[in-house]
Image (tube, rainbow, N blue to C red; front, side, top):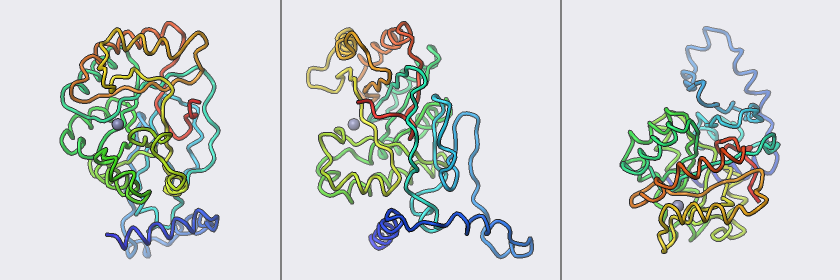
Length: 298
Ligand SMILES: [Zn+2]
């Protein structure tokens, strides 16, 4: 396994250095005669849906106009390397057409709060983004599938959220992301390109983390508003709403990413959610899902 990863990182570093010029080869490979096709391996099945966008092999279709459609990749990192496909995301123009709020829920999916949150989102007809943990997906695969089938975005939030492991070395962080990608690929046939570092990249990443995260083609997003539902104070629903109001202030930004949690014990978050949604609706925000073109909110 370690050898595979080392070879992956080596190849990625080369790609990242700007040596990639494989689009011509790929285009040519599709024009083989039918009798030769038999000898080639079966072409991978790429899931397509009107509920989400599947990234093209070369990521050329990611400059989107839709702000509420999740983006996924049908290829794992290892498959991209094996097939000589690019891993680094292209430069994308951040989406800024209308004021958008992105509701994000970390650390799930659990089997109590996440379903409650999904019910509320369905009732309110708004999409959200769930940054999930690999081990929680293994525990609650049906809840994960519900998130996916109901058109919300799924982001990668590591395998086990263990700071000691994740922040001992950049490579350990990537292994957890890779592991969770793999669990998701097996379950729903696609993996996220969006990730969120447990604890927030601003406080946890050293300078060595960013080049690695970029080389692997991950888009990392933090938040600019938090209900503070994971703090020691354990605020009740109305205090959580007040946190949102206070942090937005008198001139709320056009792009708001709200941090919340959808895991055990977060009943007050579910209680606060309808009011938080109504506030943003009243202010004229539209509800987006996080994609690689979502602007960093600061
Ligand atoms: Zn977290």
